[in-house]
Image 1 (tube, rainbow, N blue to C red):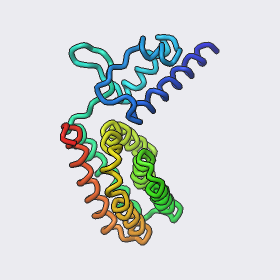
Image 2 (image 1 turned 120 degrees about the horizontal axis):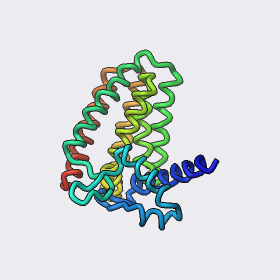
Image 3 (image 1 turned 180 degrees about the vertical axis):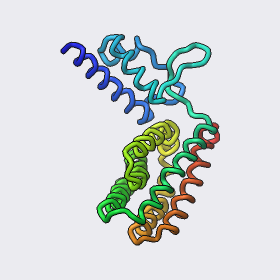
Image 4 (image 1 turned 90 degrees about the vertical axis):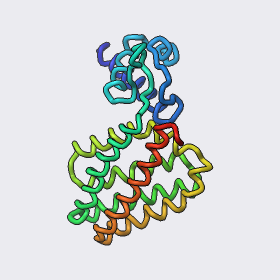
Length: 222
């Protein structure tokens, strides 16, 4: 029973750290040590070690090549572009699968866009990022493969290391929130209408534009 309790605390600790990383509270390159986290969360070093190992395996933490100290992962431009190559494979594949999707599956895509619209009206930048990710996840869901969906979620989580920092430049985001929402809505409408070719072109263009922005941020150009 004690072992189960320790694992539960470790999972909760990992969840707290994950949220701090993906929420931008812990930025890329920030050192993360057992002692500091254990004191902050009021947990044992052994428990925190488990939590940190989980985040290490998930790619959210890496070891500094010289000091071997754990730190929040910093994605290189090359890694960003590699993630986008994988995203194209999965998401454009999802668009192709839409031709055989059920009305319920397509409605989930439309619902994700409606959620995105709510964040625009409330000027919720962080919510916009999360809702945008859900839109893309729902497209991959059309493939009908849990393994592919899980792989895509993992890619998107790593990408948030850069996207969160980029998107939370609120002035920049609010300049084009409505424009970006309009493109998302057009995509969902095309998908539901069975216009697979045009929906594919819409998504491909957005992925290409996003890749350039996020790769530039990773290179320090944002």
